[in-house]
Length: 205
Image 1 (cartoon, rainbow, N blue to C red):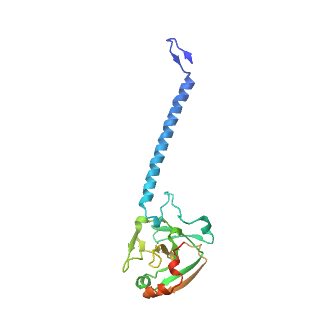
Image 2 (image 1 turned 60 degrees about the vertical axis):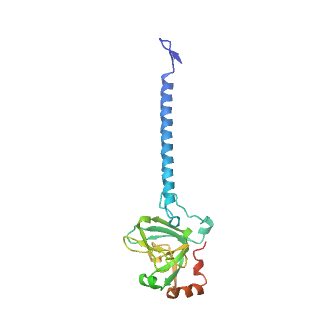
Image 3 (image 1 turned 180 degrees about the vertical axis):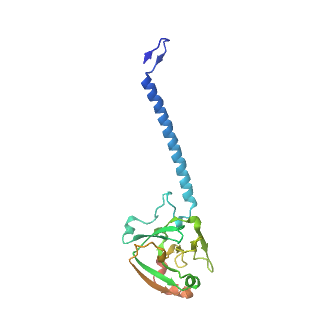
């Protein structure tokens, strides 16, 4: 402290400058915290609006719910997507794929060969707004495809509505070691499902 001629006690200049800059730093920090809080609320709101089965796009803190670290053992991460690149996904599955070649009316026309995984092992990376869906008959199968290029890189099969059917020919190269193809008589769907021992459980954890 020092006393002026007028008798007013003032603080040293250094302390005054330090106090002012400290106040500005506190105000700036408070502003950043406020912005971070608002951004967090925005991201959390966006996450709630998305279909949880299709995961979330980058930046929303997406993860694989229900897939523990121990469950990654024996699996590899495949990536893939449609032709134009609007739809991209990643999926955890074996490097040795078991493919179903179905001959039901729609699978025969579009050559829908696929392997089946639980929904928890699939994550849509981009393309939520680029996907459209076709259904028919029982409407249990959800034939999803890109609205731009028309490619179906994954879909929800009638045999496993709790999982996804992934097109192996839409995966990026480098992660598939072998492929075994099994013909599935989808033209007689009810009988084929009754006789098959394992297909209905392929989307279970």
